[in-house]
Length: 90
Image (cartoon, rainbow, N blue to C red; front, side, top):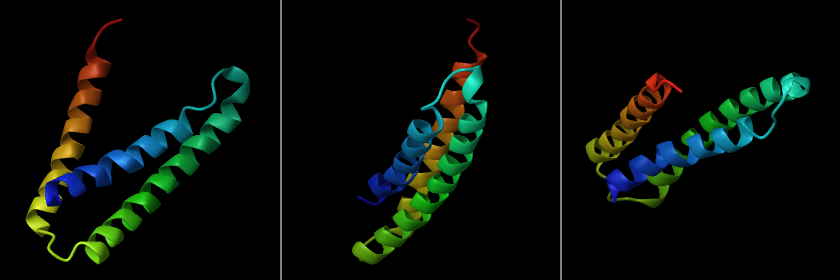
């Protein structure tokens, strides 16, 4: 359960950022796109802090090394998959 919670602490805020930041398209909406990225990134950090707080508050039997291992594993997997997706020639 600790590893699962650690993974969710990466996935949920990152999903929020992706939805919030990529909701505008086109050259005419560059100002809205930039603002959405800033707000999405700020929301991602807030959701991460709130998520860690909720995990520590609600789960008394959380194993900290496993929680942080799940969090770190999902972060590394995100970076690796992003690098792999960006390195493909289109």
